[in-house]
Image (cartoon, rainbow, N blue to C red; front, side):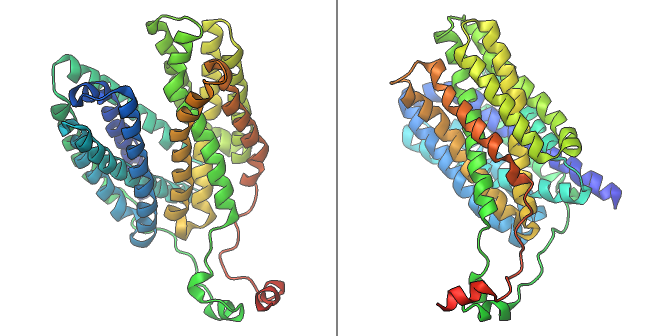
Length: 407
């Protein structure tokens, strides 16, 4: 049993690396694809919204399928679909084709993202200790692999279609190899008592509602992932335009953030075991808020880099704790609940750069970072939600609620 569980954990690591690599391969090819299709930055920005829309739809569908069919069936299928869809943006020759390609690839990526996170929740439950953050760290490792491979392919003169096609083909093979090592069964909830629902005057099928805890976790994920989106899209530009750093130095703004984010996620599971997930979220979000405030107010590039490092380290463990809490709220609906939290969080990641862009009409770029810093303060204050016990899954006794329904 222990050996099978260890194999399932390794398999989950593989899928996180795979997802990070496939997404990273597309990100590396964006400039080349943009030039080939012949579109402006503004048009590309609009088309990238379709990538997010597809991912959001895929997350909702895959979450429900994972609960119904099991993650062992959905995760490999989603990995194969994501690998196959990767080549589509490279084949696009006009904006309409690229729009369709990004929608399909986003959908596939969303399916893989949620299903592998749902399986990670089941692995974590079986281990009976935090392991989620380490999985998210290997997603970042996949991005590093993609950057190295993509840069090598570009320097060798490979076309986007060839590069993405080759990466996708390898991805399909990788998605199939560890499939048998995934957990064969996932936890199931006890069957609801239909008589209790009838006594409350409602059909049994309608008694299962989304716990309020899930929506709170989703709102916190939106805040934290909005901050991640700000770092992804604006860190290097802020260093260059506000602090006057050369392009080579400005690149270290994002690089510093990404490095400490990866390191922090490798350490976050140990911190969660020792201090609790609520403490990781509370002090991590507070640390991130301090780091981003330093960036917003810094007049020197070295100080800004220190701020980005602090920001990445603090933010690193926040989102994994939220995903884990969502999955453990109701093990039988882990996929569905993770899809809700991840979906809203993903929308925050997409909205963050746009919100900052709009705010630059009113404030300087660095001062706009005070808004996401404030959101992290809110997340730190609300971290106590992770202390709260999950809401009971069975139907409540016909006490005061029954009288309210009768009225």
